[in-house]
Image 1 (cartoon, rainbow, N blue to C red):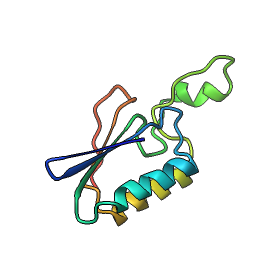
Image 2 (image 1 turned 90 degrees about the vertical axis):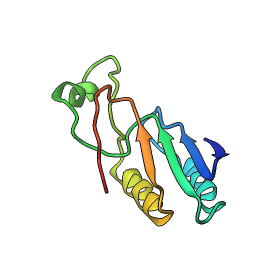
Image 3 (image 1 turned 180 degrees about the horizontal axis):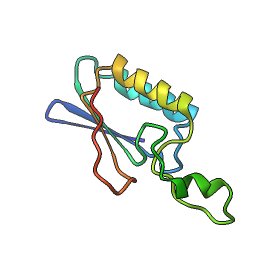
Image 4 (image 1 turned 60 degrees about the horizontal axis):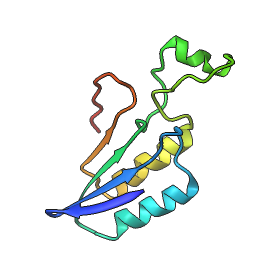
Length: 107
């Protein structure tokens, strides 16, 4: 994880390319968010913080003898924990890629 502050905004970069957020990453993320109370916070990550909406071919990845990329995180509990953390610290935006198609979720 990397953190940078610029023009009153805290940018937090989370490397979840393995489709997970580890307990150590959650600890570091929470510390980074709590360090600047009241600051505008933007989080960027590789894999979107939601589960589901996978095309059928990607659901087959567990059955295939070779890896396929998943466009989302794997663990619903991690997604719930991440979402609660974003809400608790009033994060203004979370950006993610990996799906290679435009999408927008507003909460």
